[in-house]
Image 1 (cartoon, rainbow, N blue to C red):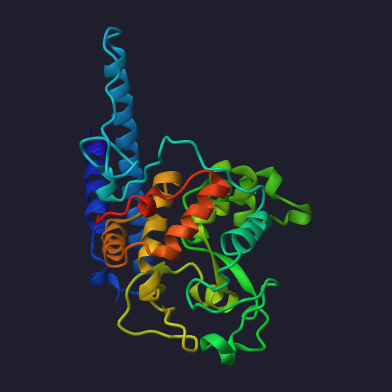
Image 2: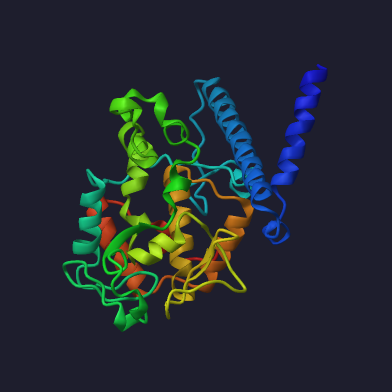
Length: 324
């Protein structure tokens, strides 16, 4: 009993620490901020357990009386959850029970669909609005990135993930321990990259990795500078040329241009609802603000329409515009 009590106290302390605001922790050293992220992961897992337990209890109660039909789910603001206690406000992941969209067979196919179908007549990169030609060559001079001319990665357009790949895979075993999967191991002890391993052994990751809603055309150098850093707002930071995206490699944070912040927010909410991508309380508040300040424009609505036509499913945060 004492051990259980101590465990309970420890979990409560972890949950309390995990809710510390970002404004308070930005100045912490990197190891401390990483430890804070671990507490948020633990908190999310705890609420996942609570949610699954609640679902199990709900199913048990509804099946206990064969004469009563199961209660209909109320029409919620989001398809992510419907329990009276909305666990999403605590950052708990939730996966919609709707069918998954029809995803491309490979990432190369997804990239081709993105560039040749979704952006067929709108060949501009997402973050810097750089023009690129049908062969994927970027006009760096025309968008204020002339100093990057000569960089092979900068001169090619890429299909970049809005929700970072590390966030899609971070809680999955294939990401944390690829060596545990024989199909991810090569000769002489070599192993596949974590994303390649998860794409091979985890269907949920593979679908999220190739979902067109989470892919945008981007200058390769911008993708490289962004890395897997979190989205946020910065009072200062580095820029590449005249592109209005800022990077802070110390804080591991990136501030996107104002004109795409709502797009990013609605993508995160879609990925949360569809694939269970975990969002902290701070993430949810940030993205709600971005969604409200930057509602869908004609470009985003048309992009969503084209992706729906390809995948059979749109982003309802774009289709059903509303303040969050």
